[in-house]
Image (cartoon, rainbow, N blue to C red; front, side, top):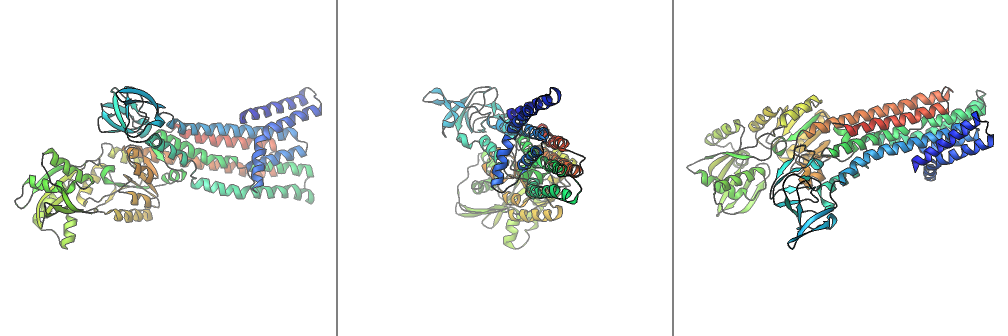
Length: 620
């Protein structure tokens, strides 16, 4: 409708002008056509201007309407009609361009099937996805999209998860593994148990968060909004002075002074300034979402573009997060089976990745272990409890040395140092007051960690920091292998927060990358908190400012590069919009630029900044 009215305004203007100049139409007939052009071109602008004026807010639409009315008062109907035609045409084209960015976001939510094939009572039937309940069994054939989040209970297949995680390579999945709505099934048939309602699927929540991110303003948007609120009233006051002072001083005739004032109204209208930043932010957030990255607002996008240091958690971020037991070294005459039996009994009550590795090792060796009681966890150090009535503890050397207020004996520390120098994490197992063994574990770096970190340095990230609760020798081995520039080891969760604050004092702005759960305090204190592998983790989606839906570190250089590019586009748009205003105002004041020229530059700059912002939709 907006575009139709703009085109009608242009048609009436063209008929009136050509008829008057070329075909000697009567002035009254031409005037009627100009008035029609005013009504069509000024409808939307006048409606918005009146609403704003009633709230004592004078915005861009108000400036344009006043300028057009002023031209009509002076009898410059063609100038006023041209102003409203180009202004309405520019607005409709801006909205069309912005809708392209919004459609990129909406497209994310439209890939989920509307119906699902449900198996109930031995038969299959089609059902609306919205009606699916937890526990229903959904059948997905080869080549179909998965309609709901759930757990595979039968079958195996490769799934294209690129709509969720941005992963270009299909992921092999089998019984017991989680699948996401919107992903594409490969060659195998699957039976999936529904675990989330349609409104709570990972894809639905991502789309909802991306849409909410549009309303969160970036620092530049906040600045331009404040500028506009002050600038527009100043312009209106200035225009009154331009109308009144030159004629009273005898410098200009009243009609000339009034016409220049109207040209200044057009020249000073900050349309490009108002649209340039939100267009860039919207385009960047949409493109990030299409590549498996959730950015929760323009503030985080701009801040990410300014960070010069990134801190990483080690386990699950730099490394795979799946440590394995590499050695069991018995002490004091104990056997390997005894060490693992007591350790697994206690660690079965913990959800730490190292604990899980110990339990898996015991199960692999078919070692039966009893239940543990009175379990107490010591964050960053270890765990204590009762096993068959005996006091059992398992943890790092720090747990036991702090309790004993002294260094552990050389007979224990020497094998620990040897294992740790080889890149292992070590845990001591103590039963009653006797150390019975050392368990060594290793968590290998992610395959793409080193190239991703090298890419970050190439993008201008000066410092790549690893913060870990592991000991210094293990941290040093991992840091050397992946290319970390500095690290802090042996940190408790609260000490990671202090470390982030110290680095912020040194570098100004810092991002913290973690799993979104254990590292939430450190992420919250960083300039930007980034969660890795948030595709299946609800907490990670909620806590992070930016969420990488997959556990692929290569997404991080993409985020940094996109943020830097977005920031450059925002600055370019600011320079263009403010530069055109700075050029046109004195030109209009001195009579060099009339209303027509002011209109051309004004609308041209507005469309230029929108087109510049839309380039982000093609960012790779």
